[in-house]
Image 1: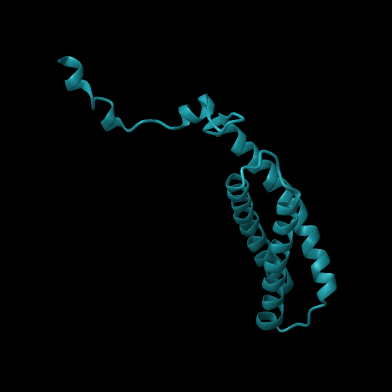
Image 2: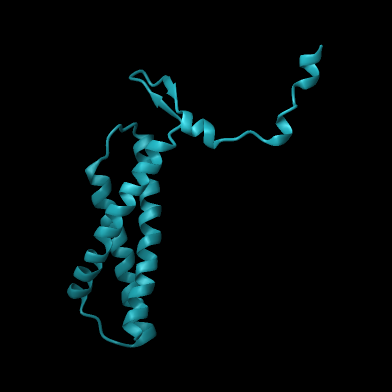
Length: 138
């Protein structure tokens, strides 16, 4: 029963780490102006998530539950938990990124096309609806 709670807590940490590392990867790609996914970023993300999940699981198992840990077995189990979650999170993040992209940049980094879905998502404040009404009357 305690092992289940240790894995459940590790799963929570894994999901949280996946979305944090994918967001950081997106910002790094934007900073380095990469147009495609970069494989070393994915490898580093998986290694970072594995380290965080392993430390979480070992701390939960050793100090909270009081059991011994087989390190290599736990790394393999956690890796099999991490990979499907990371792949699904990556696809979800890519879909969100492509649907709600503000604009499409050109080769010379100028705005070419504004995305209509992004503009529909961003609704103006209701107070700004009549903001310029006085100047239109004059």
